[in-house]
Image (cartoon, rainbow, N blue to C red):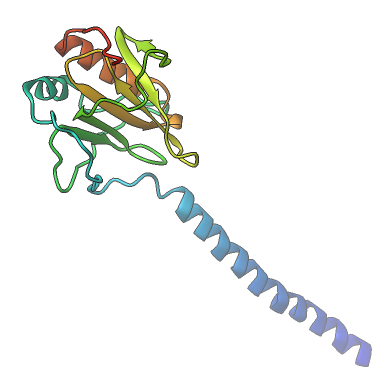
Amino acid sequence: MAGAGNRRIAPLTAVAVALPLLLALVVAGLGIYSRVSAGPETGPLELPVGAAPQAGTPACDAVLGALPAALPGADGPMPPRELDPAVPGARAWIAEPEPVVLRCGTERPAELGPTSPLIVVNGVDWLPLTGAPDSRSTTYAVVDRGVYLELTAPTETGPGPLQAVADAVSATLPAEPVAVR
């Protein structure tokens, strides 16, 4: 009879050991799911102060007025994101892992020189700016108009933001020779 009692305890012991392990796996899975499904930040964005002496000019107002409400992204349209406090000459859109940010009326990029590698997107000359080595975003500056603009976008968004902003710039601001000084 001693052997029969051990057989009954073994299944109960297995359940007693397996149940907490299963519960731990479920809790861990829910934690991973909540981090993955959280999505991008959508609340108000506080931009750091940046030098934009021409942010309030009619040129910036024209470009900002010509921008689409949502920017195209690799995973679909990116809706606008509120800035709090409001920043003259700036707009932001919801994207992952970081927002897309446009600033109009910025200062002349220090990287702009006679041999700077420019790229042309939809008729607008852009200068890729060097950023932090650990940044997952790229910043480009418009350098062939009466005001400078800077667009920072995560690399995952694809070329859509650059193209949409270039369209608004070319529709509202006449091209000028690049001043390389």
